Length: 93
Image (cartoon, rainbow, N blue to C red; front, side, top):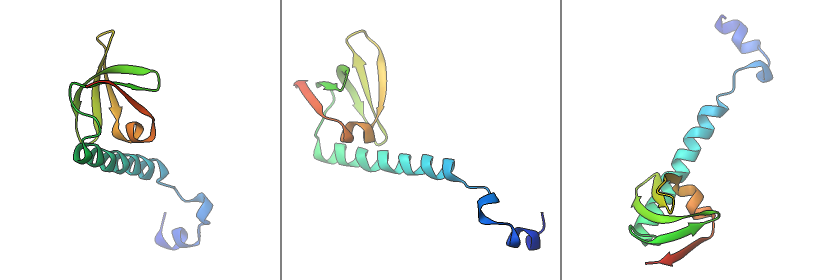
């Protein structure tokens, strides 16, 4: 497609990079949430927590996600943006 035709093409027919933008936005939100969790030390390694239906021991808190081991020995990676949006119950420190 030439540049001349591209200029006159209606906006609704142009490609929209919404998937890329949404993914980037979610990564930025998780990164900011990770910084918040690490700086405020709201949750720490070794604590047993419950988030919605998930209960387990925190293995690691990094910038994008938190690694949790459930009672069934499953390892879960939860985005930090999810943790900051949900009610987190600390069961045991």
